Length: 195
Image (cartoon, rainbow, N blue to C red; front, side, top):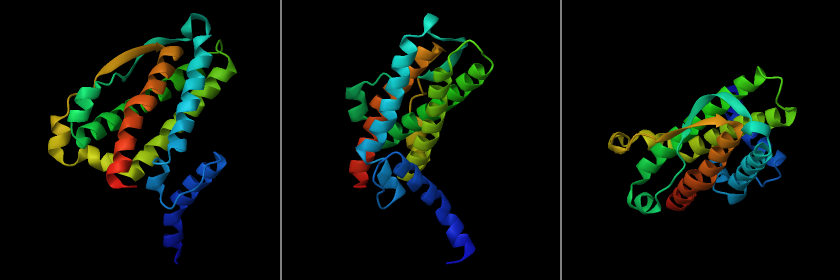
């Protein structure tokens, strides 16, 4: 195998090292990682821990501005009747919006000396977790499914959003998104693809 071949395997090796560091088994292909329920549960647990920590924060740990995040409400009747492409669009756009929101809150916290360091750690973990989830979902094919067929993406309703002005609300939305739409979508995608 040439140098290019070895370099192409580097992202997969790094992902496997991440999973090993989390204490999870490495499965045959990256797409299977998100299909192992323990992987997603690990991210959900971290989000819930951050939410719990911020609940005790004075004044709700104000961010000083409104940050746009995805609405996490799920109409299960509508969800079951709509197409997988619509789900992919909603999850992919929601994940991108959450990533932007966490990065924005990270920047706001970097300029604040009033918040405890533990909160900064939770925000940093969330930023890292969202990057990992984006990679895992990309390996599952959500990005491709979200843009093709074009009629699924164009017929999808615009992403509903809400505003978060505190860390507590931001982490509650993050936790709800992972436990709701993301978990629903990955469960369906893994069953559908028998991955």
